Image (cartoon, rainbow, N blue to C red):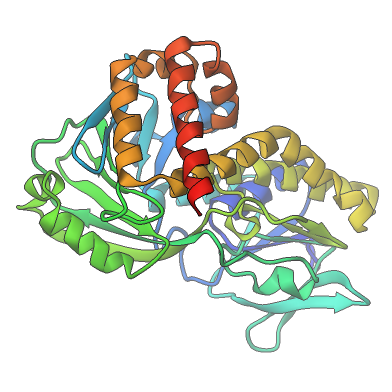
Length: 405
């Protein structure tokens, strides 16, 4: 690599590595600055990824990183009612996130990307408002033509450019435990638990692995999620029975942005991707697939800027046009869905789960549903009477809840 790379990527998570890989594969010289001493640690995400979405991205999950294949989900309402969605073939992988992140980094390295570990970025190098590189902790400076910010939920760097950072509103705090065993759980089904007493503003989950262990977690908009997780595992009338012999082997705590993407994701010499740009599904908090989708476009645009030697925000704005065309509608639709879900009382949530079961919405979801592109799925569902009845109930519940406020 020449002394001055074309592109510096801040952060070696999935989005950083995939943006770097994309740009390097096209011919750019790319350096990734990672603050930790290795890729994939600490691990936060449950690693529950849509198989078809990975294929659309051209990614193959090696067998050694796949911990399970999931066919569906069991949704448990606040009062214990269940809605079961079961598909004929596996629809998601449960992956080892540390190994998945390493896999993406290995792809990037094979494409020519260089990684620097224990190289936390202190600040941007700015010249009259134009980003010219990064200053590392200590006194070292790395100049580059384009900086791609993939630092996660920290808004430190993008705020230096004057861009709006993540909003505190609709930011939930997530916690996840890995447990050594779980009982009475179908090994190819994820369990989702709803209710304001379980996880206010979000939900709890049990994600089984083939070896009988599981990932158990939740997120909350209020209170300490660690306390809610302890109550869920020890006191929940259903989940506690499944987890009564479980021993926690690992746990992590992390914020999840649910407020939708930040308004502007580019500046002179600068692009921002993934959690840093809040390119996260507001309904589920999943950020990997949409983050990778946007990171791929960031890598392409960064390369195009290097190739054309144009680094202005006018040129780099094509990045935002592209990712919005790909995922903008779905993110906007899911943001409205999240707001509606947060407005529902537990009794309304019970009613919706009950209605889904009675009207056979599971068969509709299997035909037209997409775990990632939920906005488009919602549009397709409108043509099915049973699904339309559930959507109408959902909207009516939201409207009546809003009217009471």
